[in-house]
Image 1: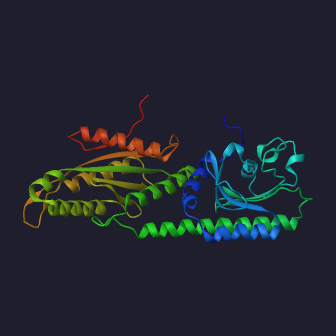
Image 2 (image 1 turned 180 degrees about the vertical axis):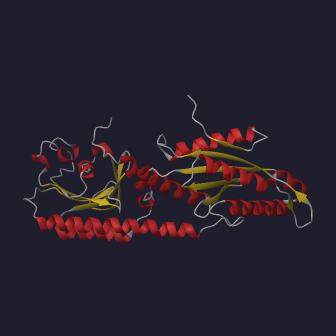
Image 3 (image 1 turned 120 degrees about the vertical axis):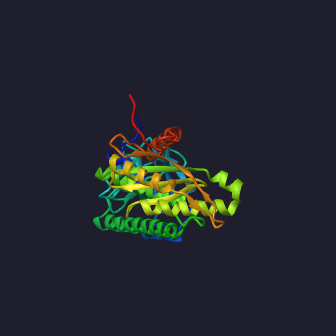
Length: 338
């Protein structure tokens, strides 16, 4: 058990935070400006905008603070995540028994004022915080000061959300140059969003992993261009089989992925049958030669037992391995064994 309080919606919260992971690596001038404005408006020496990840707090913008992150158990912001609707203000940390012995209070930082407001997304999930810090204790905060702090946190949150949407739009514009399908990175991002949605609503979805075989033989017998032609044609056949609203992507040289929304076992197995039948038809090369490729399909359906995307992908990969071993039937649904 962690030494700090954890919100009931922690799983969903971390999924939402993961979609903003880019902010930790890519400084945003707008956020940098916002912390400067906050510090100047309240006349404090330090201000930070942070994202609270599973085990540490990352400062995506800061002024007057030397470190770029803190271990989560060292953070002063954990109580704010438990009640993100209103600011959390401690006018004198040294006089509060909950914080008096904290290293940031007793140590070199010698903090006295903590004033924070949560950065919440559209679903109300607390992604991080906007915090003002001072080495001097403050008198009681007014309602107007608290409202101003919350307004600044709202601007910070919307700035982060806008950055996320711009990145998603940029990913939508990216395609695999050979097949015209979505690339693996885009598919991964879509899966993360879909899993978070399923965890909130319980709506089912199924992940399919598909792997071709036979392209090496075509490459050796007819050349690279012929193998590329066979791959493009196979990708088109796959695209014709997926339903409107489903997502098809190229995950590797001979591997594809399908996100099947609003579909359980029967619908996914029906798609797998259609895919194997479509791919089984001979391919005609520009030379007039007929060639063929095989395909194996592994499937894993979201359920109440699904705890992470990594788990679901592992289940799909395991089912794919079983499907490759079944020469008569080239698809397999992951099943839990006891």
